[in-house]
Length: 397
Figure 1 (spheres, rainbow, N blue to C red):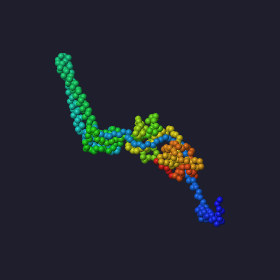
Figure 2 (figure 1 turned 180 degrees about the horizontal axis):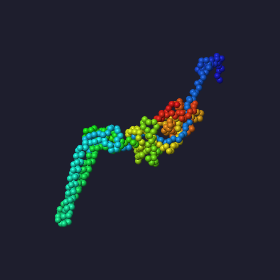
Figure 3 (figure 1 turned 135 degrees about the vertical axis):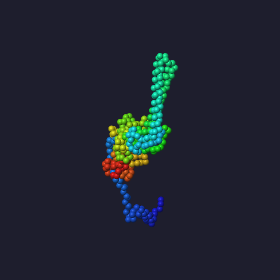
Figure 4 (figure 1 turned 45 degrees about the horizontal axis):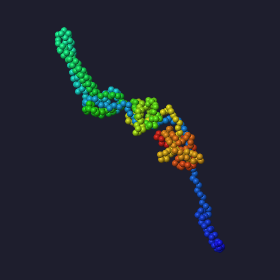
């Protein structure tokens, strides 16, 4: 049993206790004996929200392509000769059969004259030989000549007939060569520049002969492009090629103002690229298309629209390689929702999966919201957030 403490010890312990209490109060107070007030939680951020909408959309896919000429010809000479004249203006439109170049015809005119002269001589000899054969046949009937003379006369006729056919062929060749000195346009189209100037020797008989100029047809034109395997299965497989319509635009055009029709679908998909080659025919009476131009091709089926969920493009966030939206849940909490997106339709983005029509999402102020945190919502129409440029750039709102 411990001894009782003296009054002095009790007073010392009491003083120590009071001092400790004073220190605690000083640490918690502001020097006036009052405790500091604790700061409150930050207010929920203000955001704009809208309900996802559902509309019928037409399945389309935009693809890059190139304009090609339906007909393209490299004009070459068929014979050797000196270029005598050029009869066209570079870049002009020429008709089929229009004269483009003239080679010096004089050597070929001489060949034609020689061939025709030899042909005339052979015809005269043949006429005489046939007369002699007829005479020998009459004499043989009267036994006034020998069988040998009759056979010689018949052989001479057959020999001259063979010579005549060979010489007729030679004369035809000479006349063809003379005609080849006039080089004409084989198609209707736009001609390029002359690649050879007057006075040069053109060696048309030495393959490959030089290109004198080129001609490309201008109306209609082809637009060649490649479609992915998924696009082929959605739009092309099982359909007749000539029943598939496309819309075409050049690089500087808004929308797709030119109508076309697919006229060729390749017979296999390239396993290396997973694409298939296609070609559409487009009217070019305006002369807007030039072979080689880049074109945008819209492939789709306007007869079979489908219902799709659409949202403003800026309501979609990016999380590494994933896309997401923030859905307004209970207690105005923003819930993370991964989505799979499609193409733009009238400035709104198609949501292929992950969101239903009518669900309310954050469309403005996405960067101020943390998933799972409460927000202060302000309801706006989804259309009001869908101002888009042609390339899908979000507009101001």
